[in-house]
Image 1 (cartoon, protein in one colour):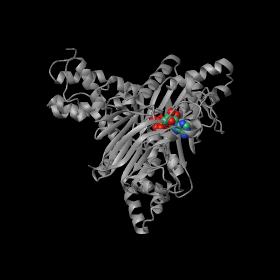
Image 2 (cartoon, each protein chain N blue to C red):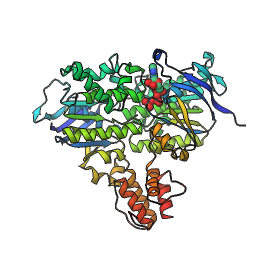
Image 3 (spheres, rainbow over the protein chains, first blue to last red):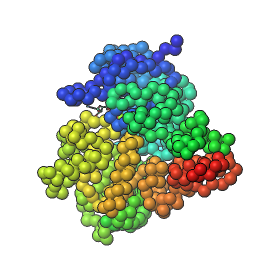
Image 4 (cartoon, each protein chain N blue to C red):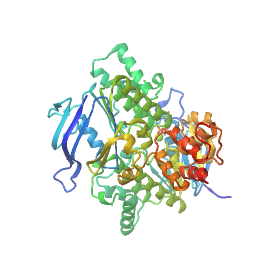
Length: 277
Length: 284
Ligand SMILES: Nc1ncnc2c1ncn2[C@@H]1O[C@H](COP(=O)(O)OP(=O)(O)OP(=O)(O)O)[C@@H](O)[C@H]1O
Ligand SMILES: [Mg+2]
């Protein structure tokens, strides 16, 4: 059997100062993620997505249950460095992740912490900066960048670390459509190169090529399966506040008018092919 | 309120080697009651443009007029007149409770007691937050999406004549997104609130905007009726944007059905087109 790179066993979590009120952020989650999977993580605002991924690089540890990353328990502080080398994370708000006063130093920061040789650090900075279109910004102060530019700097910094697991918490929310497309193909490359990807998004279109979708509702996993299967239950979609992509919506309109498309297309190209074909 | 920008230029970090021209001779008029969308690639000057419209960023050259009046030299926010929703609004939450954060501007406008309470609850509802459950929470103990909703509620709560919103739907879940757009449309329709919205999601802009301005490198690259510009895929791509899904679909269909189909923006129309191609006409 393939070994799971991430495994959660009966994980629950409640934020400390939320004591008194009954809200739990995560509730009894058990799941395994195999190396090389592309996982889309979806759910309404406040459903627990960010809390869940903070568990995966030991920023948070469970109140009960256990999390293992590459076999290492996150509750053991001695493992934290190795866990964070394995699982790299891009936070939802880029401002909270920018540490240095120049873009170059910011990308270098994580690399220096890995203790890589100087030439290797320089090589990786150059490659990452080129890939994310921030090569022209290296000397700039991150503070003065636009929201989308900051987001690209943060992405470059994390991808440069070449983590085996890449956790992306709504990484493209401030990118323009063109940068977003470029970013998707980059993530796809990393994934095809063997990386495990955990991708949080509110846009189903971004998850067309995911192996597996996990949906959270009030801290519980309410769906774990293939992308196309998540659209079959209206009740589920309503609960997780998800909207199917345009191709699925159109296929449904056609179905209501008495014309079923099978299989249900997930992307516009699939839809066009089925219609013309 | 009418907002006029007359030949505006603005640089950040001027006089340093890193000086960036964020706006370069921009002239633009926002008419009262208009729904204007601003799109453009990352760093093209959209957020700066909103800041100048709001009067919180002072241009190096050019004039900003609010209802024909040049802005005074001292930049300041004008609750009730202009509401500005920033790109990372979660960075501006500062009160102890969600209620107080949302109540900040209405209080400054003199609202108190029951009227204040009603206003805050209404604003929280507009952004899909359960008012009773969230009003007493600490803003920092919320998820990012929830924080953005609170910040947005704070802007809406002042019921300004003009709403300037920078990517208001980023990080919101789809149901909340749809709901918010509907509420904004209703405010525009019922109270004539002027709306200027920066956004990347062209499908959303197709529903929302009457007029579209495309920014490129600090300049206005295109300015016209949204339904016309959004169908022009070549134009959009030139500026790093992506056409709405229905428009891309029409192009794909034209490619594979061996016939040209005019672009449509409406989902219902797109469905009709699909039916037509399949050979059994819209409406059965
Ligand atoms: N620092 C915190 N302190 C207390 N409660 C928190 C904190 N951060 C999040 N929560 C609460 O925990 C729950 C889960 O939040 P989480 O940030 O994981 O949601 P999310 O799914 O990432 O939402 P979003 O889509 O808005 O980013 C929510 O009820 C939220 O209000
Ligand atoms: Mg989150």
